[in-house]
Image 1 (cartoon, helix red, strand yellow):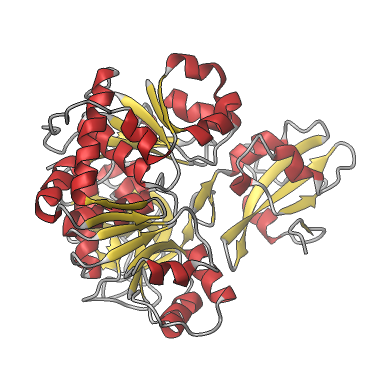
Image 2 (tube, rainbow, N blue to C red):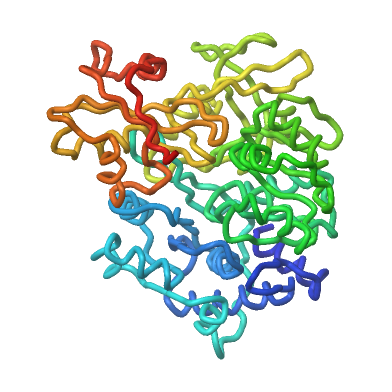
Length: 502
């Protein structure tokens, strides 16, 4: 089976039922399938076929899904681009992915045109305004033939930041997506009457694998919101009759921090994601009557590998392992550690093609992450005696702010372009809302106004990577091999300037 085969099978069984509900209207299963195959014909006319790499830049709207499915139906690989990227980060994604075509919303194209520059000259660009605009590209075309692949083919390259500063492109197959959908449906006990609300960007693994694939598996419906809004959250849930939603920990922390009164006048019964602090988890369940299904996952390992299910759950943990995954905790020498002992979380699939196929054009990183035939996550965890996983943080230096992975090296490189910065280091510091915030530690040649630091970086980095805190020091602590001793900087508090407006 492929993703599109599952869509077409669902359309045959649920044709007139809603597939996606949004401010742009309701699209039925039958309409989604028809639009997908017709747009697939339009892509075929542009030479897009098996193995083509197609960048997709679109906001949270039905058009994203039509394009995503249509690219998959051509046997091509979708490169969902983070629409917050700017400058060299955006150009790098398109270049490194070897994208030969770009499907892009007009408003985003105009916003990014200067950043894309002459890269556009080498791309087949299909731009559109709204759902009707996308459909217009397929006007008069017959539906394309359904994709005939067996599901082992790669269908996405999703970029995830690494400690080297250069993002890595994670290749995942149709089967990895379908396996995650099956596992998520079982975890949550989903059925055809569920409506899963998505406000996280569709270019992320979280909504793609947890929500879209669950809908394909069950005949349920997707509720698309353009972005997360605390004030509109429960009104949206009631208006669209949502039964659940996907989250990152930041979302739940913001809800409980700002919506302090109980609210149970809705159909929401579950939420699923990772990063919920224990105190926030308890508040969500007690205050809103929504069951939290905390899991552990990442793009590389089939979306998620441990989770709290309707049948088996333990508060404060990331749940037990999926049936099709082996999950262990290893010491520094790749030896299993006993329950209660912390080590690195490692993963090995029990079935083929259910985790990443590799990092695109990066065999060294693929080999390093897969040593001794286990995928090494770079995260710290421990199992209890009953097989429930606890997550203790990242062994890698990556900063996770509000669900976004931030490479400190990428921020440091941008900071070092400042004429008055002699040296720079960036670390994550704990934050009750975002999980972590970004702190820039600077050695200045001449005095620098702290407030001018994010202003200098804006346009060089996306907003989610801009530091909230700035600190000036005489020198950056480093090892003999010039590696930054970030743990020392995380504990250093003297002279920290908080740039958040009061």
